[in-house]
Length: 75
Length: 136
Image (cartoon, rainbow over all chains, first blue to last red; front, side, top):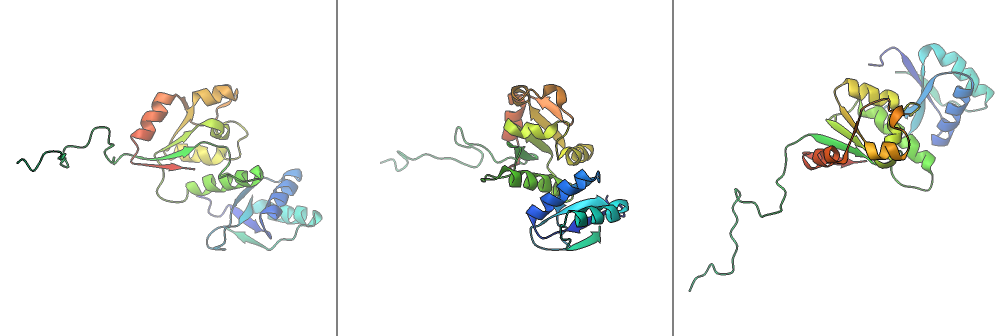
């Protein structure tokens, strides 16, 4: 149902994902904390989902907030 | 001498009084808190419940009914972090029922954004008639 619409941003852990959500909200970028999709990791982790159109803006917002990004994947 | 004295005889068609008969009713999910699990940090429980409802729409089996009571009803109102997921589940046909007493206690009755406000009769019947009840 989400095909071709979203991307997930992977960060180091849950506390980083919470911080990422704060930074993206502050930047006015719609996002959602979701479990890391199974095909990306079997660990019980949390990542941030954004719309693909917002990926560049999200990357910039997280970099400005000095939050390290482990990966960005389209889902 | 009667060898059967003092013995009780039950057959499969004669269940003991007061014993429940296994039901083949619906799968019911019970949510009694706005967070998932117990721990010293409520923030983590909030993240877990958001994750849970996100994946609930993608995994099988889908519950037929989700019951919300106690602070779990806070998940059903405007501004809830799981509202979008619950609305999607409702659209799929999942019945979402909220405890009216709890809604009133938290003064949220006018803010319900998904599901129906119900009462303890319906909640009790739904749980007792369930084929399987899963407590979050």
